[in-house]
Length: 65
Figure 1 (cartoon, helix red, strand yellow):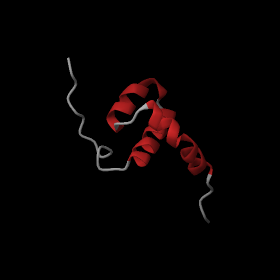
Figure 2: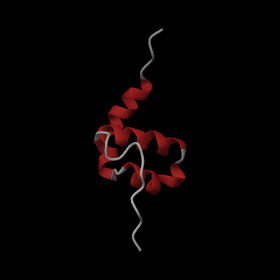
Figure 3: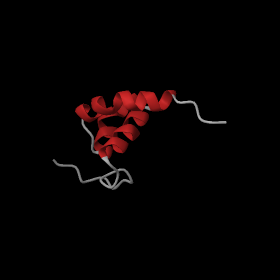
Figure 4: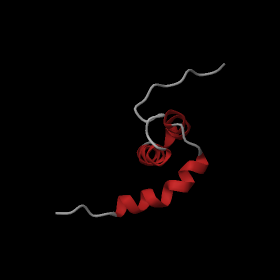
């Protein structure tokens, strides 16, 4: 049985980097649904690995003010 495409704001209009960051944030908040989060955002484990360091740097940034 194949699953129907999931209409989301993240796929395919956003670049891969942004979809990976969204997936990483989502997984950080709900690791139980990792496979579903990856499917919805149309990313792979390789994609997450590629963008994980930039996502971690972004999370460490202190906002101005």
